[in-house]
Length: 245
Image (tube, rainbow, N blue to C red):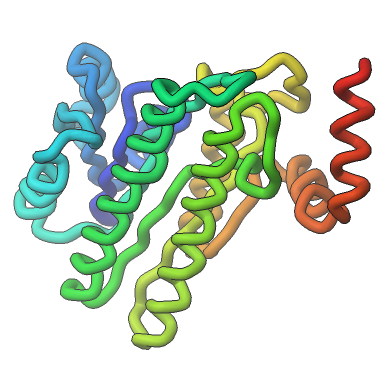
């Protein structure tokens, strides 16, 4: 057995495929999510090394559920936060925005802080978030989604700094996928939509190499570089040009 992995949000998409991939590589995986029927299906696909825990990560007892999993495992090597929601909002809509804030920011922050303190006590560990290339700039299709992903990336960068300052063997890995063929890929102007299996293979390698940041897939790395360093006046000119087509 290579180690213990907990995945938050493993009922579908990237989370499910990562659970199966880590299990295939010899890890014991605890997959969590809200939909018990989908978790049961996942466990059947790899019942020897995948176990499940059904709960809502935004609920008040979520940290207690995570703590129970940790106690049952004895130790955690890798903790992956893959839960997330993207809702298209042409204009500000508090109901939609609140859902994204609750899951992408509030629950994520509680989880990250809890696991940081756990890894400090354990002496080592790795936490992974599946953020998005949307973290690099603002976006008109789902503004709060872009902002929430930027929050995730900056929090992990800050936690990495704290871990280095404390001289601790703890790594926070920020994975920024481009468009992936899952239900999370919302919007009309999608391009370079990558298969989830290929994406997860590259995510797995980035996690194994304990990278602090990785853009996947490889073809999205150049796009990320351009997005990150494109001057504001050129970025907005490009946005305006696309809006007129």
